[in-house]
Length: 206
Image (cartoon, rainbow, N blue to C red; front, top):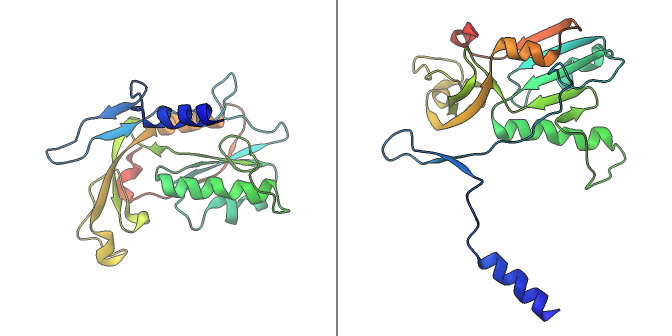
């Protein structure tokens, strides 16, 4: 008992090994370094598409979700044979999407239960990815109003969202995929039933 407790305390006091962590140097003088980690975010089939139930007949794509007017809430029920793939690079909004899975898989209120990887509904997955022209790690400018956040510099002349939309509160390094890679994740067989792009107009270059 006492020896085991002492061992646990001592191990907590040891410096945490960092050789498995990847850091990115500051983007500019005075900025912070960034911690970046590879992470298993979804399971794919042999063709590189997101795994879907066998009875699915079409795919819905949602590029940009935030936490309002999301397609899992407003569209998915109208397409009972469709599977939704959502892309959301802001981690807090991505986390909110995934948190919906608990009540959908366990409607009786069970807690501390596992749900399938990446799923925010039985017919929907969310991926913490942006969509960009070239893919790879990109700098994402985060506005106080999440809907104004962009991979491009914020437009100080913008009227949408008022003054809160004009300032960058953070810049983040986020992983991104190209539109071609989005389509690959949807698979080569099923048709795209709906496509939602919640992005600023200049970003439609992808």
